[in-house]
Length: 555
Ligand code: FBP
Image (cartoon, rainbow, N blue to C red):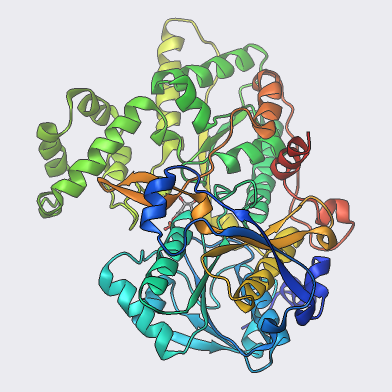
């Protein structure tokens, strides 16, 4: 492999550690808090997680802990979409294990949860870890989206764990993957196994958060990467003054990425899906909002602008939400009929008899490429793959059509040329920012302490994240504390509740206070690229979202 200069320089970066993680391992004790409750549906969850429900919060403090010195065998899985910092979680876990006992071993399960099920593993040694420290991507052990759900898959996972004499499995993933971790914990205990299961909060989407999990890793780097690109585009728009840029941003259902990017770059418009749903805005009203800004800016001679669109937006516009849920239901219930039809035209004719009248009207009004994207396969958790629906193109098409009509009726006199972008994969495997490099290393190290302390069914937690790393608070949160019951593939299932944008939260309020002015004036901000070396106020500062949320929690 050839290495870039930055790649080589990043190997030398030493992640900053919380003070407690610098102690000798035998001097780190567990402080146990009160028993916990699930986010909702306590009784149903207590019944489903008989052995692992309601454990206490824990944190690590100075004190004697003789357990930490034993040799451990641990398996690690990277699960779901890539997020910057995953390799540092593994590095932190590895270094913790070796600090506890040099004979401890770490196995990597290849390609996500399917590696555990199929028993595809390999030894992670010091050389391998050193080649991936402070780098982006998940290529060290690969990732995957397999959901462990059938009795055979659970049994196969236990078989692999026994074969390797594992003390613990660490699952680094988002809400669905950590739900898997909770189910696996319960299964292992129910089947008389003492293999522990520990989760780590990963996802660029930023929607795996909670009072005790201030951020999921990867969000910081990914959103800063998108913000750099958005800032560059905004500056280009302000220079050429001839294009409207429609930029779709990853994030699934949650608009945290779009909101943070809006705070960082100050575009003319940024939709927040959660607000669109709250206001019950129709597609036509979303188009109205864009057209109003385009017309008003054109009156000032500004035929350009930047619009941010969260990728989940389509799922929050009431009539499209209904259409998608009808499609999900029809495609699951009549799967074999659907799969037998080989052409798009055939699917359209078939859907005429299956969709409700209002949903059919919407479906038929979409440009063909969008309608085709709505029929693409669902992910293993039954979710529509919003990253593959070109919402930016749909909105460009509708705005163009509306403005053309207004031009004919002389209600609009400007020029409108639109360019679409989608930023998602560009940020998922970037070199982790200093924040993500430090945070992830601590999460991995904390996972080691959770294992060494004999705990299971916990997600690694590092808090007080806006303070210097030395003051971070390290511990674990019982996974059942994050869970509730939700409808999945037609059945009620236990899942981790997604943290969507809080419309009463400080980040949304900060954006809402600015947006009327941003729609009309040009107030772009140019954050520039993620910086790895230099003054802390440029290199180590975390997201505006996290800063505002933490400040608000202190009041
Ligand atoms: P996770 O929820 O697994 O962290 O994935 C995040 C994400 O990047 C979403 O923002 C996006 O919608 C999705 O993954 C894309 O999935 P895929 O990688 O399968 O194309």
